[in-house]
Image (cartoon, rainbow, N blue to C red):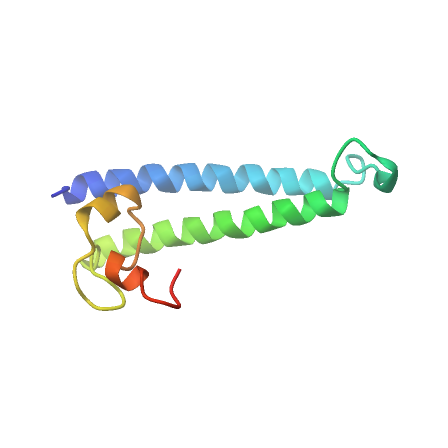
Length: 118
């Protein structure tokens, strides 16, 4: 089994990467909103996606990155309270391999596989 110290280190690494990714996305989004960056005649640009499409794509990616960071922080909080590795749905243990692959997961494989879950 993985030690608490190594889990804490892994979560810290994942958090740093997620925070850096989120910051880069925020900067990208700010550039897209900046008038000096935006080509106002994007409907005639046949070379690429429209600016509104690109904005929405970055906005969606920002939401995903924010959610991932929140999940990582929640996992760190569960580690601090002793609830890390406990399935939020059934109260059983989350499989070690699942935690190794995604240390922020909240539910075990059995509960994650139930219809209506993702």
